[in-house]
Length: 168
Length: 168
Image (cartoon, rainbow over all chains, first blue to last red; front, side, top):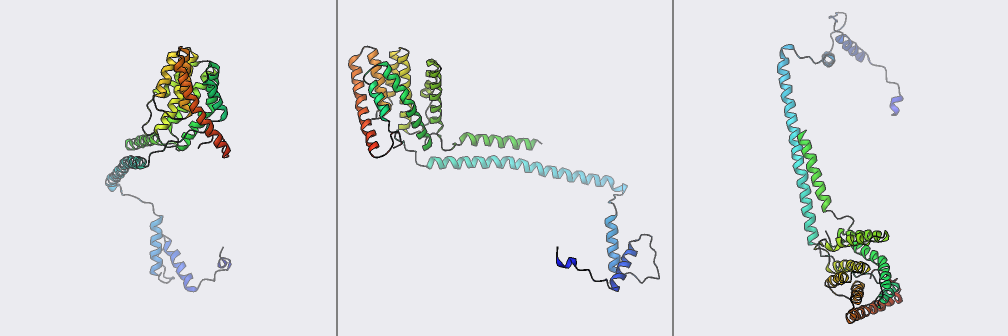
């Protein structure tokens, strides 16, 4: 709240009181010219006319109703047409933008250097021992090598996936 | 109304296209698919269904590999899968099938890594099962040579203070 809001407004001057009385008088529809009052100022009459006009409901004379209805229908149809054109334009522009972006992304990925193959992870001594056992023959040793390979395989695939290059 | 529906459907189509082209978090879908299928094979083996496990692994080798996958990544993932397929064939007493899987894996390329050594081991086992001792001995020997190199590398990494299994 501003400090001046707390201060009492100064009492109106005589001229202000006279203008307010004239405005109130002019707003009264039944008011008749009164010789006891002085002639109202022009500003008060204009303000009163504006206020009356604002209070009056918008009314179309019955004779003008068909013309007004036709004009309103035309305006509505034109507005609908504009909206439809906007949607169609958007439906063409959006995929065009998406296609342009895809083209740009494809060109970018093709111009990038090809991904370099990564070396497989270094095997553990346990895995190499299992492989050496299998290389001496025996079905059981081969089955154990297959078991030992599972962890190594996961590690290898994870490495390839983290590197992230290559396949589209 | 029609324009709005058209807009919505075109935007949805564009979004679907953009999402299908997107790479999530730098992950390679082909590697992720292979990892998922290996996990499925593990579960099916755990459930005592090696035939279903083999079917999951066959999906990896039968699927087309995206051309953007580096050759060594492709070789590593596929050779590892052929090793598992050959091992499952041997479990099913299908030595010829195992030999075929191992040969297909080794035809993808050679390197002194765990995947090639595993294929030599499983091919040696297939030769052994088929009664071809010299061929088995040759494969086992070649596998052990790679195994020795990998063991030296692992021990070297350990003396350097890096944990085995870490990505080089």
